[in-house]
Length: 113
Length: 109
Image (tube, rainbow over all chains, first blue to last red; front, side):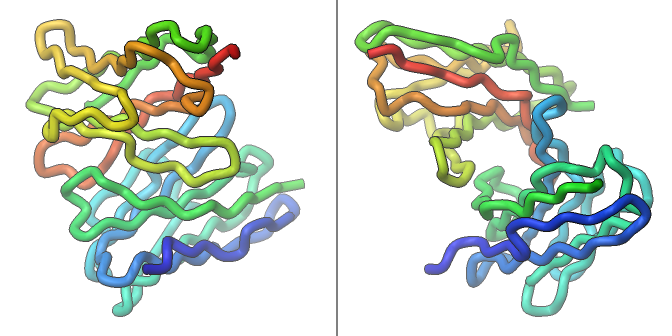
């Protein structure tokens, strides 16, 4: 089985721009979660989707949004980028989202200049 | 609210010595606890979960509800254990996995 795939792997943006990150889960997995990883804060939960519905959301401003498509692929969007948004964004998939067993992608490293 | 605390950012242990990575949690109900590991240049992956009560790669972890702890232990460290370890908590019926800030374990040859 192919693992979780995230694109792009690296990107550089400037303040004020917006960015869209993509995640393809493991085949058959219907839950997709997003995390922001930074050296200071560690892994912070952004949101979780299941069957195209957002079931849970972390404490991030409204500039962070996401969606899930009928094929379980997911995207997250960050608008009006700030310097502090520079981070590794990790996507993880699981069968149902209730088991705690997440399969992570390699991440998309965003640098905001 | 759910919270996970890993008090040690860095931990160095000699090969063959015992390892203990500390994890404390805060949660009002019955949590599910996990340990995730990230080896160099690899993806973050599940190491073990408390409900399966199994030993993975020689590591074990016992949930102590009285002390709200879930420490990860291994009796004899090996060089390949060097990695970043994250403790994580999931509340009952909650799809959100809360991670600690992680402990970087280095095994000294």
